[in-house]
Amino acid sequence: MDRLPAGVDPAELADIALKVAVEAGVLVVDDRPRDLGVAETKSSATDVVTVMDQRSQDLLLRRLGELRPQDGFHGEERGARTGTSGITWVVDPIDGTVNYLYEIPAYCVSVAAVLGDPSVDGAWRPVAGAVVNPLTGERYTAALGGGAWRRVGDGPAQRLTVADTSLDQALCGTGFGYDADRRAWQAAVLTHVLPRVRDIRRIGSAALDLCRVADGSLDVHYERGLNPWDMAAGWLVATEAGAVVTDLDGGDPRAGFTVAGPPAAQGSLRTLLRSAVEQVGPESAR
Image (cartoon, rainbow, N blue to C red):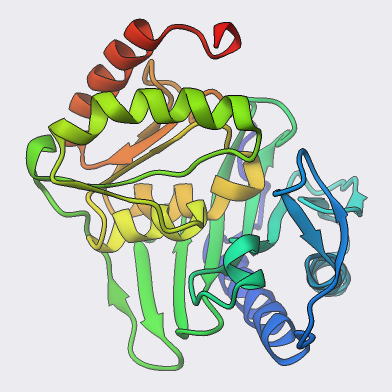
């Protein structure tokens, strides 16, 4: 993994991430059309890309280019930039798009500064990030080595620490893909998990779920199919709060699986998920 470039302060990058995420959050709330149009679809008819997704990303691309012109840019929607500084910004302009469409107040803007190549599993790592829910005013931030923090609006910042609980008492967050076959496979895996945890929550935003592991409003989280923009900022917020965030085998989180939680519960959840996957069989076989 690349080292942090000389003269780069993760705390300053976190401040920038928060600044632009707040700006994008104002845009997606204030400029949301009453009858929101869907510009196109992603992987299936239920995986929508809205006009506001693209507008939000365009704002983030422009503002980060103004503030950090030598950095790269990697986002969920159209628009990318190759940088020369060693820092790449990984953004999700609206994480929880379906919630946004239905006006459910559980979506966010996620902005992270990373080292390495975010297009390659295991070849990158976040060093600063912010996750902003523009409706609730929740603002999560983290910088490498500087802890994880939550504030509501401009209120005081609270340092975050993961809850320490056993898996059988854990409130577990998860998510589902948009492809029907993947959902069927995930549902089969879930039948093995549900009886062995306190309960399941499917909130609809992986970035917010990872932040909720950090603040203890979820104990653990797992999901298959996350992209770098889904997890980059939340991964750092969770780890800076004391969580372990890995794939099923203890490596870096990736599309195959992302599993987050306090060390003991996260280890137990990985063991449970490996067993579930063995019993359900490979996704491609269903």
